[in-house]
Amino acid sequence: MHPTKSGRWITQTVSSTYLSEAVAIWFRDLRSEFRTRYAVNSILMFALTTLVAVSFSIGSFRIEESERPFLYAVLLWIILVFSALSGLSRSFVKEQEAGTMDILKLSARPQAVFLGKLFFNLTMLGALGLIIVPAFILLMGYKIKFPGCFAAMMVTGGLGLGAGTTLVAAMIAQADARGALFSALSFPLLLPLIITAIKGSERAAYGISAAGWPEVKIAAAYAVIMITVSLLLFPLIWEE
Amino acid sequence: MIYKILLTIWMNLIIAAVFLYVEPAAGFPGEVSRILFFHVPTAWVATLAFFLSMIASCVYLITRKVNADFLAQSSAELGFLFCFLATVTGSIFAKATWGSFWNWDPRQTSIVMLLMIYGAYFVLRSAVPDHEKRRVFAGVYSILAFCTVPFLVFVVPRITNSLHPEDTLNPASPGMDMKTLIFFLGSLCAYTGLFVWMLRLKVRMLRLLDREQRAFRSNF
Image (cartoon, rainbow over all chains, first blue to last red):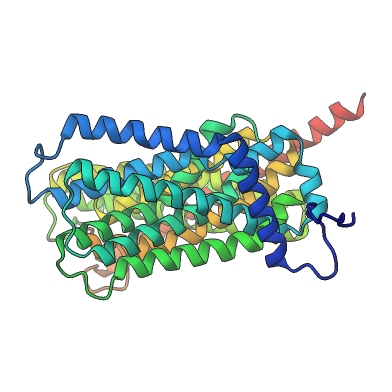
């Protein structure tokens, strides 16, 4: 395959690097997502529905002041994780359903495909976080003592969430019963991250013994390890 | 055959001795401490089995020898069985000493995590129709899952303290007298022997099933 004059095809040429291929796939996915808005709609609607349900049944005064930092952190992460699990598998499943998997295999190197899909999933998670976290804070009256630490926890937690699920999404796209399978396979892998993120958010909200941001570091380490291992393993499941 | 007979005699001897000959350890109420001889070996076999399964998965991904995958699958299944037994015996011990069957002690958290990972592993295996693909995916998933376990081992103890008696993990600790130690190691050997016997049966079964399927397909 060779690039056309307009340069709109994703092609593997001598000059293309892993990063340029990954960015090309990322932009292509963003463009197609912008046209259909399937993944972003399903993730956001899921998140908004749960947020409204939680806010309606708990409100901002139902829980004791001293219990709030912990319980609100739990609720926030339950909303974030399960809305992410409801839509992130789309990145690979849509290739399988549209029959474009083989073309993608021909036009880019496996690691570049993985990185492109990871960037796309992280973009989705970023959009989810930007909308849901402020809405949650406003609706529930969540008081946070250390906003910087809290924001860092959200960012690293989101990174870990994307890193831990992208490889699973690639696997379940090639299996039966995709929807249920994605949550079942991702959840055990995400459990350490979720426990860490809840603890970190709780500490940032309390404002005590949050020095050094230990949970932020653990979540960042989790993301780095998962991305590295996924990059090594991805060619095995991609070239089957 | 001779292996099976020897194993039966050995296990029966250990069980009888553990109940009739060894005295219960000091510091535990009543006869509770006897569970040491059954709980710790099951947990040890579960660890061994999962580790073996991970290694066999790596070997399969590198060499693509079907036998390695049979070993990985059988080992994971037996590991799941023994992990479940360790959870149940541990829970009984928890009721007797801590007062409740389940209280999310770090040990209980990590064992549930293991059960969930391997539960998901079997779900994945059953969901991929293609044989070759199924083996590769299962191997990849078990390596990926293995990479998250250190986080649980280091992260969860930061959050709560464990009540789990540490003597049971370290046979060389002064908390265990000579007689107990001998029968404890004897029990470990018995359980490991049982695991090896079951593993060989399981692998043989998978190999026969595979051969039968191949013969069936070659008829067409």
